Length: 489
Ligand code: ADP
Ligand code: LRH
Image (cartoon, rainbow, N blue to C red; front, side, top):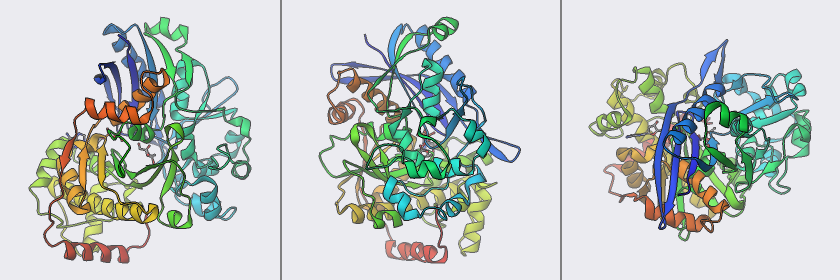
């Protein structure tokens, strides 16, 4: 039987999943799971990519122990973070985590040299201060000049396994350096960063076959023989390829994990001024698609509150406690920069509630409730903006990713947005990674066929919208909070 392996590493956890396709049904098995987080050192936040590489090796060893002797393999991770390599392919710095504060004011500085409008027209990518463009802009100039190659994190993991360098397009688009018209790195933006085109590798599209795992690694660690296939290496691109939609009706998605990414799949970029003002982005997807979406602060907020509480309660328990709380007692504007990487998320939420004259949530249940209510209100704004900007009426909302397990948040979303929510699969990212491998080897025709197979293989949970009591008053409170506080990420 043919085996397809996916390495999917999000900002909060990673996993290695194996899949088989039999009789039009996709079967998944999780072989290995591990935590992921950044750590602070000397005032900066860094990822530990060596640990991540070791976890991939452990996962591959488990695959071999399970009897998988040969397979295809794809890797996806979160976006925007990068690795500088010298001529020998060695890393020349530690890998900054995108929440590191060094880029807080980078956009203002860069936009003294080129306007925000021009960058958006070229790239279609929303301004987030942690985009690679801004990270490279504030990176040590000498180190940048020394860099022989600049790879994104998943490109680097592919390189460590195969010895082959590439810049995969879905993740490369989040650099905010790709030009939507030429579909290449933009020369003007490169020269603003004092970079040369040859400091990046060739762009590779999802679906290409890259090569085998290096024989010395196979031998040293006793790994299966794997052919690495280029998948959508940006986790959100894989998550959307993993949505169980036949892609016929007008559907939108929320990829619900550390971030909530709410948007639509489109065949063209929509880089108008209105889209820019609403901070919508056009990230590249597999097979020429674009993800027109918005970043919403997402479950990062509950991850941090849980961590600060000593992780005594599971996410399921926190959602359970939240269900028993009074709805909408306190709400916060999730996309405020204050919530991006605060010293304490709990204190930051409490401070916002105090300053806006709302009850201060003090228990795990009331903090969780405040987060879920506020996320659902943010989704409501984003969905209305999405319909306005695309001039489409959305009839179906898919929620995929770990957040699809959160019944309270899924129901709140259906209720506040007044739309049918189809929740699941929670492993859509690994699934999207795998279906691109299947398309690549010819076992599936295209994303549409993949959507049908996913829908048949992974039943979703349906949430019908219900009436929300006192909605007018709630929306008035929400609007007045927005008027009080202008800036958002
Ligand atoms: P990422 O890929 O960004 O690391 P995931 O897609 O793995 O994120 O989603 C992780 C999130 O899913 C957790 O932060 C948690 O909020 C949510 N989650 C996972 N399982 C459950 C559950 N059983 N109940 C409620 N929430 C859950
Ligand atoms: C989600 C994600 C998102 C990016 C952010 C950096 O994991 O990749 O799409 O905006 O992390």
